[in-house]
Amino acid sequence: MLTTDQVADFLRRNPGFFEQHVDVLMNLQIPHPHGGRAVSIGERQLVAEREKSRLLEDKLRELIRFGEENDALGGKVHALACRLVDAGSLDTLLDTVYLDLLDHFAVPHVAVRLWGVAEATAEAKEFAAVPAEMRQFVEKLDVPYCGNHAVYESQAWFGESAPHLKSFALVALRREESAFGVLALASEDAQRFYPEMGTLYLARIGDLLGHGLRRYLTPAPAAAG
Image 1 (tube, helix red, strand yellow):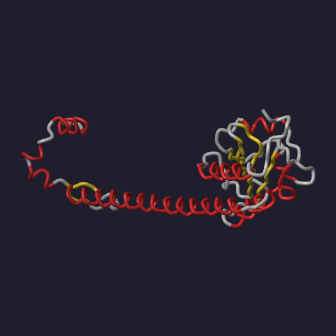
Image 2 (cartoon, rainbow, N blue to C red):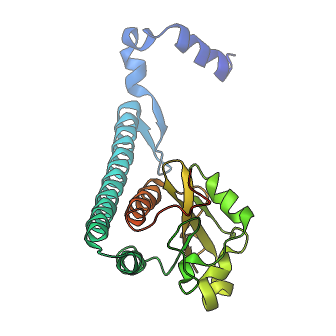
Image 3 (cartoon, rainbow, N blue to C red):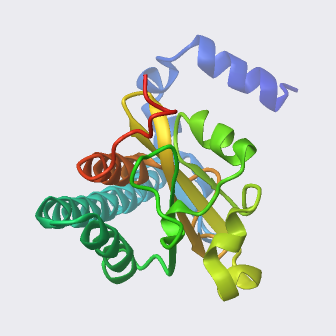
């Protein structure tokens, strides 16, 4: 008696078998994929094609949804860029970033830290001292950092909310290739800024803010050159 493997091997080596024995093909019965009854090969192929079509439709809907979300996000970034262009002072620019990220991007906690600039003042929290290891970390960022752990002391930048924060993002602010600051974001939602997330729009926001800040900030004498 032939084994099932031998039958399968024979059919693979003789693809024209069913063309020569149509009656055998027409009488074959196989289990329905979603029930116990037997169906013909033709019916089974139809079910398979319908299933494939359903999966493709689901994938298409998913791609459309992603596209719509990206379009909406791109629109928000464009609007932020316009507001940053309109900002007429350093304070207005910073207020614009804080409010825009909260109101339009629903980022609940935002902090900016700047260093190595001549305009630094002790009164503004943005110019509070940043340890060398933190500055070095930001300098080495090729892409924004996202994760469930704050880097060095950055969690403290968010004040009373710090103990409740579960995800963080850091975006370098650069003048040419050198970092002169960082945009820090945080959330109580552990999935808001996760390690595998895309960072394209975060990087663009960082670029926009960096360029905007450079209108009002100049390198400190010790950092120049």
